[in-house]
Length: 360
Image 1: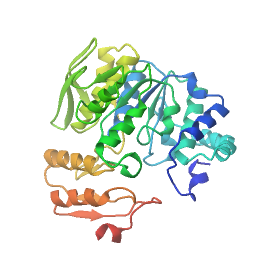
Image 2: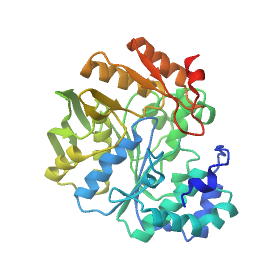
Image 3: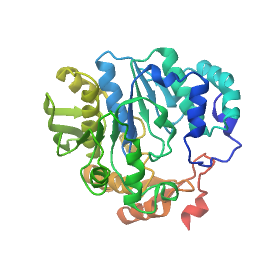
């Protein structure tokens, strides 16, 4: 049994509050207190940042738990131990055991998934959990974790119905991830994220471009992190396992977060960065003829992928689909501007937009 089996016929409404998940974790014994976490939020790049952090920690012999959202193919991908998805029988066990808890506290799907993560990681005795925030910061269920370090990748317009009408309000919402006593690492010193953090007088700030510095590029189909410096870590050059110039920012953020958690061996670090994989992010499925898949979910990330793909590979065709509730119209317009051929399809998902809607 999958968790989805309990929720497939329900509306995926968002009901902003932390009360339900807080009561639920207390009811099952506060398992999240049995391990430290790295909590990663932001509009784009959360998953990739988590992937880099998880691989670095695993190379340093830490037993890792990793909470992912959304999953790409199978629901089991959301909960991982040392990079491996939860076995089917284990997921079925947690769903059956916790079903009454889900119902008693009226948990949403994401809250239920978060509760499973906390119990699974505690039961497995992980050394550290990497927790990917679902949305925003103020009301996200992952806030019940015990973060040793918090990271925010960036802020762009997305989920405006819940997070705020403009980028300033969205930044304000995401900064609620800050936890007293835990370093807050910002992947950008740009307005408004850093500015809002200063206005709120948040402590323990560690900011890209100010406290840790680096450069990067994509050369010959390889993503390179260059001249990274933070604390006692210096890296002249490291090859990243993920394609795209923006992955340099994600890797630098992950590296800084891990260094704030523990000591790092530079040789192991370089190997971990090159070995990092994260499916569905500028992923080359086939080289001849070239086939790339990317799960960009908002116009900002779509624009970056389109620009990078054209720079690296020249003229390409796009196969596109969208979900209701996302700004797919602007994303589709961006594709049309940069390609003579855009093919539309429909994804098998409750919120998948039908092709006729996409066409109009």
